[in-house]
Image (cartoon, rainbow, N blue to C red):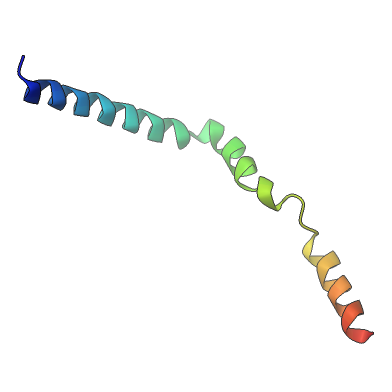
Length: 61
């Protein structure tokens, strides 16, 4: 086997694996879990109503 053929087959295997990961990530059954994980950094932030109320109190003082 020539080195070019081996590299070509390696590229093909990696490309097929990439397509598999993309399809797995966009699978509708797992989308809800990915959406929840994407919003985790914002979970500790106060809700917008509480933040606006706090800001309006500090402006009145």
